[in-house]
Image 1 (tube, rainbow, N blue to C red):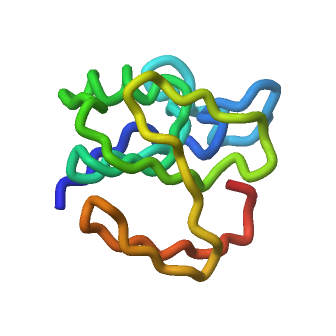
Image 2 (image 1 turned 120 degrees about the horizontal axis):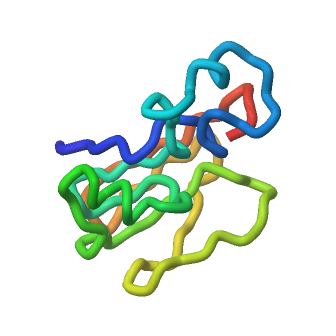
Length: 115
């Protein structure tokens, strides 16, 4: 399985605007982190975040082979804009396991923090 981290900065990325925490203070310039998203085997995108296509390109990948998109955040945020060519995203309810069209199996795990 080939997993490419397209971002590791929580749902909104880091630094968060006006956040005084140490993680946000350290996430400046080259250390800034994009919103969390994963590309699995070039076919499964976990979390459609702003700039995911650019992040994939920087990592030497394309989203053109993505056959399924699953979302974990934001649960109650604004509607997600789906770039042309990507399938409509879906969600897996917490605690459920799903066999995907790509042949992958995903288990949604409830978290004690937003996103």
